[in-house]
Length: 365
Image (tube, rainbow, N blue to C red; front, top):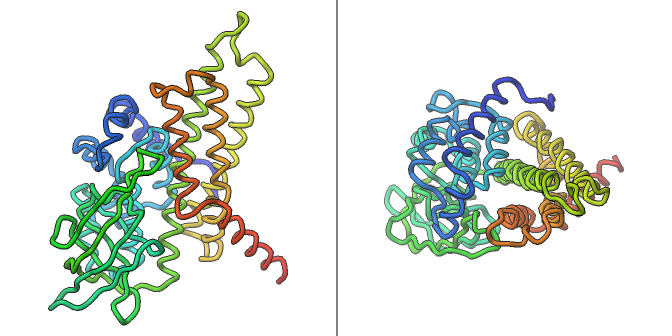
C-alpha cells in the first residue's frame, strides 16, 4: 500500500479543489443552501458530474471511470474541506457501491450509467433505523414501513431500500415522488448534512437483487470509510483557518502564533489530522484490496477515533478566540460537520468496544 498520491490522484485532487473554490465556496454556495433540503444546485451538480466525480466508482463499461475507493476518498476529502452540502457521498459512493455489491448487475446498469453522467441522484436506506417489508404486486413489489436517518432523500431521484420479502433480504429501487412515498426532514446539529425520515405506504418498488449480510456490511463499511475522508478534509480545512489566523492576529505587538501555548494547540491539531490521514488512506485501500476482516477493522478504526477529529475544530475555535464563536465565521460549520461524523451510525464508544474485542480475539489465536 502506497500512502503517497499518484500524479493522476494529485490532478484529481487539484481539479476538484479548484472547482469547489470557484463554483461552490462556503460563502457563495454552502451558506445559501443551509436551509435548502436538497443541498445542491443544478450548476454545481452538473459541474461535479462533468469532472467525472459522480462516476468514479462506476465501471467503465457503464460510462464511469472504474476507479477505486482511494480516488473517491481524494474527492471526498476536498468536498469535506469545502463543507459541500450536496448528495455526492450518498450517490457516488453509497448508492454506487450498493448497486455494484448488492444488485444482480444487469438490473442496476441503467441506474449506474445515470449516476455516472450526473442524470441520476440516489441514496440508500440502510438497515438499523427502520422496519420495512415488501409484498409482491404483479411483476413488481410494494414497500411498506418507515425509514429514518436517510441522507439526501429530498435530492434523490431513486431510493434504494433493503427489505425482507419473505425469502431473505433484497435490494429494491423506489422512485422518489411516486405514490406512497412521503419524505420529511430530520433536524440535526449539522445543516450541511440533509437527513430525512421516509414513510412508504404501498410504494411501488423494483427488485434489483438478493443480498447477504456480509455484502450489506461491506457497503456500510465503504460508506463509513468515505465519510471519514470527508471528515478528514473538514478537519484539515478548519486547522488551516486557525493556523493562518495565528500568523496574522497580533497581541502584545506580535502574532499570537509566536506564543508557545498557541503553537502547542496548532501542533496538537496537526498531529491529529495527520494520524487520521494515515488511517483513512489505509481504510480506502482496504475497501478494495483487503479481505473482509481487514476492511471491517479499518472502518472500525476510522469510526472508533472519529471523536478525535471533532477535537480539531474545538481546538481551532480556541485559537480563533471570540471570532470563532460568531455566526459569520465558518469554524462552527466545520465543528458541526465533524460532530455529525462522530455521531454517524452511532457514537465512537461502541466502535471502540467492537474494535477492542476483535483485536483481543486476534491476540488469543
